[in-house]
Image 1 (cartoon, rainbow, N blue to C red):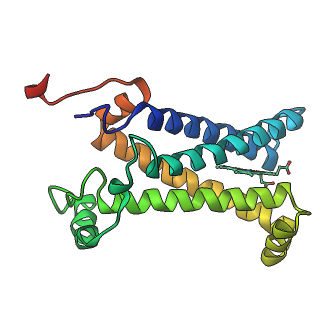
Image 2 (image 1 turned 180 degrees about the vertical axis):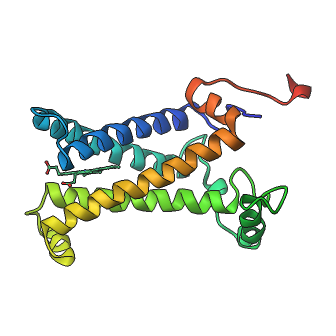
Length: 198
Ligand code: HEM
């Protein structure tokens, strides 16, 4: 089952834009690290610089929509006692030892934790990226100093890309094995209602 009310259009548009940014940033970033074809560095850097701003905008807007507007979904993101109590059951579920994950609303406790982690990772990647971009600005210069210089920061930014890849792989696997209906809704707006309410 997948209802449009669970994933309103504004959220779906931001999710799509975010995915687009991730693809552009990954391809262009990978090229900046390993220029696998000649003559594209200018274009790839340009694409990276455009997408990095959009990447930040999508994150800020999505966080804004958690708190504001008719579709605000703060309640879905609260991590309470029920979530804590449900972690064990949910881990067992993912290990194929339980029939159902803990029922804690729209997202189960591990989903919530993963999405929090992704948001933190996005902020982290933006900070490492802007340290490469605005390296003379005092705050970012300080961050560069903290990690031992530009070369280290580039490596951290690059390694973080691989952490994103690992998470996205898991995310896509879960979507196709657990929530194919939601994939249709998220990308194509196709709603599937339970048989009784069709
Ligand atoms: C707001 C977010 C981001 C900002 C501000 C940012 C900024 C930058 C900058 C300034 C560079 C150096 C470009 C150059 O030297 O010409 C860079 C390189 C790179 N970026 Fe990003 N980036 C961001 C997000 C991402 C994301 C999400 C990924 C991948 C998932 C990514 C992957 C890379 C890679 C692999 C490189 C090459 C690193 C290297 O030099 O080895 N970036 N980024």
